Image (cartoon, rainbow, N blue to C red; front, side, top):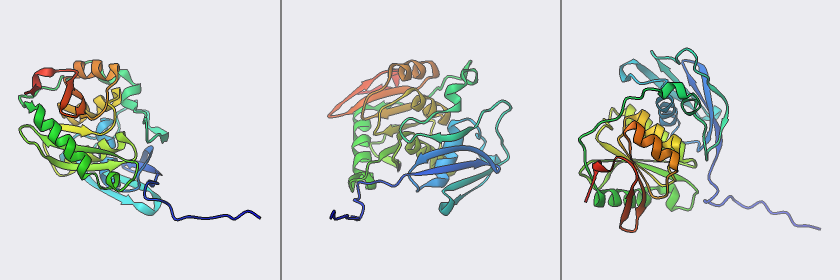
Length: 250
């Protein structure tokens, strides 16, 4: 007779749930991700989709963990013609309505900044991100995202999720809720940079996006067009500057 065992889940088995996001009680998306940090996840997602932007119009965000749902109340609402994602978006490669609707970025406003980022500071921040990621360092399979200032070799914020898109949404959402100006900041991620990741950085108004890993060619092309500096392979004492290189020194 077979012996069936039911072991206690290992710490490396990260929690994953479908998380429903609402804007003014209207369902906007279902995002597959980690069931923590839900308020900043929802706010960051709405920012990256261009559904909210004015901090003064924001009312509140309420998470209901037992329902895996987040409700955002704002004086802003979805523009006419916006197609909400009424399906589950993958934790690995989420789909964005912004990416699917090319008309929404036909004539983009190019990001401008006078901030300059030293390569050694970028490396130090990336090292700190890997060290400060608590779930990553206890064996869970998560991505980390951090926010650093120009001229500083340390991070202001760190957030995590099983998906790199969600990790960035959480970081951007928390910075927006805390009224942190990101126009002279850099975003740091542990995963690769896809085209959508570059678009998220642009939507957030952050001029520099740094990854420990690689970037796609479409991400580089879109970043150059939108005025976002992409830096890949930030590790082992080296960085690769792929677009808008004038912002990286040293």
